[in-house]
Amino acid sequence: MIQYSDEAKQSFIQYLQTEKNYSSLTVEHYIHDLDHFFEFLNREGVGHIKETDDLLARGYLVSLHEQSYSRASVSRKISSLKTFFSFLNRENPEFVNPMTYVIHPKKEGRLPHFFYENEMEQLFLACSGDDPLSKRNKALLELLYATGIRVTECTGIQLKDLDLTIGTALIKGKGSKERYVPFGHFAEKALRDYIEHARGTLMKDEHSFLFVNHRGTPLTARGVRHILTKLVEQTALTHSIHPHMLRHTFATHMLNSGADLRTVQELLGHAHLSSTQLYTHVTKEHLKKTYQSFHPRA
Image 1 (cartoon, rainbow, N blue to C red):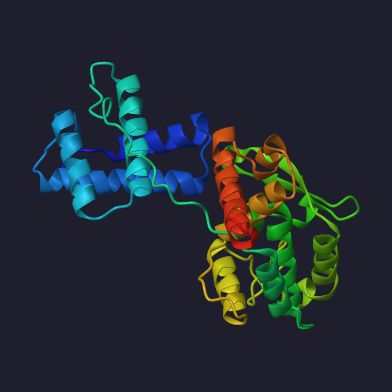
Image 2 (image 1 turned 90 degrees about the vertical axis):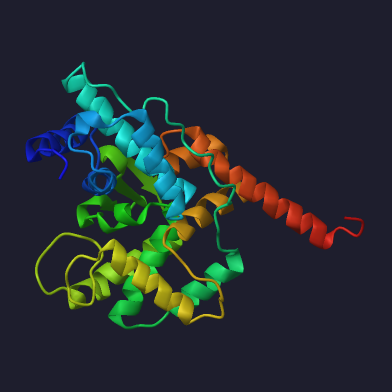
């Protein structure tokens, strides 16, 4: 087995948590990518991490291609390894970073999927019941669509983070960065109804998280995916859903309605404007399809 001490691993984890200020989920992904790389080195008979050179690094990329990893997954693994080897080089300047000249693959040109407004109406109708779970599902759906927050941000919201009087929520985003996001009347009404008439019924043990599952414990990201999948099954929609589609939908609808890019960037919590600019391609594609569908000489 390759020599890689638990001490070095723990030091790297501490570096990611304290100096890079990464979330626990991001750290978990980094360590998963690192373990996957070391499995490759073990298969290649490498006995010590210092034996890793650029030839082995490129061999690893070839193995990822042979295993049909997506470009996004390959790019993430490259980022994880570059960060790890840079950390080792910082701790020991004599250590050569074998990932220095490895280039990220070009991103796939896929545009994010989103719901049209009539499709969103179908989803809202699917959770219009009076039982506690329907009230929770409607509040969840309204909040995700109203704010464009990430699912992990949504499940992390506590009651004290909400201000229903002015319609804002304090969101703890990536890297523990905080931002306030506004929400409108529909979300405010659904949240009030859920908190006042459903949350207490669902609760089993006392905790302060906003959203509760059917067992009374805090709702997880996996739970949100399950809820949204069930809502789609109750509609006439034919495509599958993932929670990020509501984030895509929020951004696309905002830009289609005339919101400026900087505002949408701030609401989404994007560190770089380039991440938000992806949605301008979606809106342009939407405009093009609409034009081609309705203009007599398109």
